[in-house]
Amino acid sequence: MITENSNNKIFDVKSDPIGSGKWLWWFWLFIIDSPKTSITPRQVVIAWTAKNVVCAEPKNNEIFFTSNKEDKNTDGAVVAWYFDGNKMHHNIVMEKCKIEILPEKISSLSKTPTSFYADNSSHKIRIGKDFIFNVKPKSKNTVFTKHYELRKYTKNIGFSEMRDNMMEFSGEIGKESITGTAYFQRVFADAPLVPWSWGIFHFKNGAFLSFLKRHVIKDFGHDISFFDGKKFHNFHDVKIINNGKSLRSFSIKGKNDKEEISFTTVPYASSRWTFKEKIAHILNEKLEYNEYLSTINDLVIVNSDTGKVITSSRDIGRATGNVEYTTGILF
Image 1: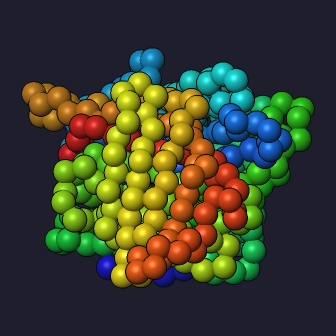
Image 2: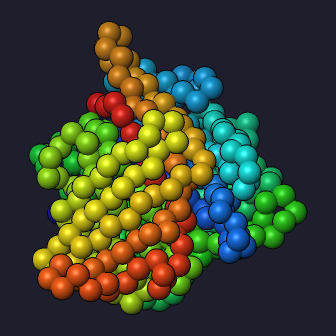
Image 3: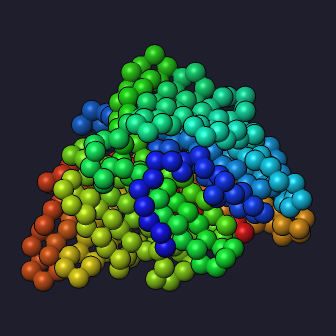
């Protein structure tokens, strides 16, 4: 595993070439500032994905990929949704398109134009004419800079991930000026996409929390990472209870040598995409990608020996974020 800070790998596909069956994925989550009394904060998600296969037109909330190993290309898709505080607007963009990758930006050659531009100090994301986000680091603290991680399991199997857990933005939706916080992730994978539960949450005081648990690989890639505004708390013994079927909440616990953490994600809206692929014109594979817009109001961290509360939601307030829950597999 190699981990490093990175500002120059966002659009670098040369060191992460898109080979046969490999995925490249750019993902932004925007959490829009809302009044303290709001229990359903607004959110926007956009993702660009490229894969070395022929990409058929999306249908409703499904994206179909059909393998063609002899044709290397950057055909892909762009997908986005917007929750306006009351209603989920599924698929404000969902198009099969060519993904144009340049050293300083990516853009989709789609009916609804989208783009993501980056330099050393800021980012600009556009979705059509109505959504503009100007993003910058929250502070110079290395906690709020991009981190790049590379894992290779064999010569041809592995993944790289780049993420920024919490940035801040200003922008516009229509003619309305908005502010808020953002999460960014760029993933390259040349390994099977196995199902997972993952979440990212932002607190008003600058704290953030993320968790990950893969469903089918025991004791691998399971962790909770919580930055309380001053220091990190990392937990690796993670248990997640899935509550419900349509609008899912998750009861989550973790511990380390000194501390225990527990919290529940409370959903208030959801969206879903399905990625499908036909292998050798015979096998049909699919990955169901569910997203639950949620809050956390009951976080508690205690000392494992004494039971004394170290920090809680009473101290740092409510968290708002997004939970991904996937089923199926893609090779």
